[in-house]
Image (cartoon, rainbow, N blue to C red; front, top):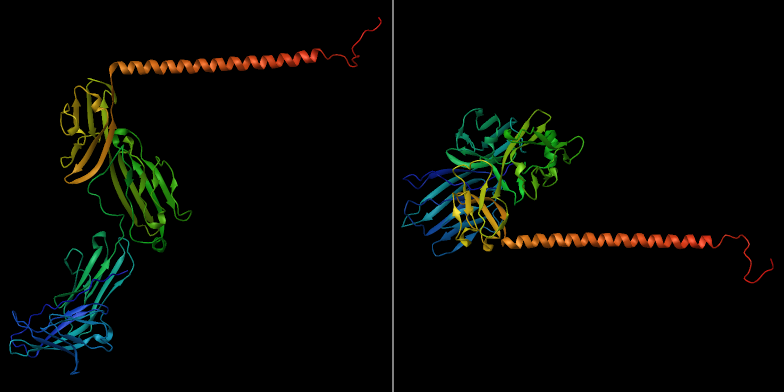
Amino acid sequence: MATFLLSVFMVCSLSTSVRGAERVVYAREGDTVVLQPGVEPGGKPKYVSWMFHSNPKAIAWWNHLGGQNFEPEQPWKDKLSLSDGALIINKIGQENFGTFKCSVTSGGQNPETTISLRKLTNTQIPASSLLPGELLTLTCKVEDQRTPEIHWLNPRGQKETAGQTEGTVTRRVTVQDSGAWTCVVAQQKSAQISVHVVDLGPVLSHPVYTSTSTPVSIPCSVPPVTWKWFQTKGLQEVSWEFVPPPSSGVPAQRLFFLLVEDSVHFTPDHHRDLRPVQNPVQGNFTLTRHQGREEDRGDYRCTVKFKDGTVLTKTVHLEVLQISAWPGTVLSVDQQVNLTCGVGHPLPSDLQVRWSALKQTSSVRSLNSSHISIPAVSQRDGRKWRCELWRGQTHLTSAVVTLSVSEPGLQVNVLVYACSAAAALIFLIIVTLIFCRRRKRRQHNTRHLRHQLCQCKQPKPKGFYRT
């Protein structure tokens, strides 16, 4: 689908003889065009009148006192406006192409300029988004008997020469061909057309950083195409694979896979508690989890396969920031603690670590940006410590650790109280079990006694009997 960027401006200068000078402007149907009056450099027009074809009636006029008027009938109704005598035509229709004459009164002269507005047409085949390697044809034509020079500029601003004949470019596209292509007619940048070559999101020049204190998001998406486009192109499979660092000794694992013939939902494999951020029919295959882990470090490979053999691949290198505390996070007053913030290996030179709690503690001794030491902690140091990772002015991620600091005797007392509470709980459980056992035994003895007192089949009433 092509999107067009408007505005066509004249770049030809006026000749020294203002009367009879003619210029050509190219525009597409639906564009907005600005036609400049023929005024010599430095001149200020006092009165400007615009005519169309040979009709002597002006379709628009303007004067330096602010007066202006426009043709109220079709095909000019609600299409015209003026800016210092320049004629602006909005949403040009087929009936608005032709020859315009501009009469200007300026400094005692009445120069007249003729401007020929010619129709330009450019097309893209196919009009939809393309896969890398597909054939693209761009065509640019003008309705002009003089056959002006036409060429194309690619998205990098370079003149396209390969595969071009008479305003038509044919080539097999790459990701670098995605963007605005400009059709240049007679040295005027006349029209642009947008070409979209599908890719798995932007190329990542740096790793993605997360931490053990923040959510993790591993991006992979194909904007802005629809699921119908995927089906048309013959989507076959989408999969995620995790490749741990070589030092871990862990083999690669397939996390998720989607076979289009079976389902439109991801099937988990070794998912590592990750999950797709949304339904894949939206073209977004990003994985996420509410919190990062140390073992998340590694490469994540997103692969999209099509039936014609086209394979799109994106690899995301994930680094995990974390804080380690030695000898631990539970400390006693006056005990020394060392905090280290990092990703498991030396940081690149363009990254900096900043600690957010340093200003609140005067006892901190900074060994370097990643390592700090507190020779003697106080209860004031028992709080959250945050380490932030920055690249220049860009905040990448942050990690948090909580230190717990107490008096030396307090820890012993807490341990004693905990043991006492546990012993009391065990005693109550034992007493309860003994009570329940005795109660059950008593109930059993009562039922047995009743059974012994009632042995006769035909008991006699109470009283005295002869023997």
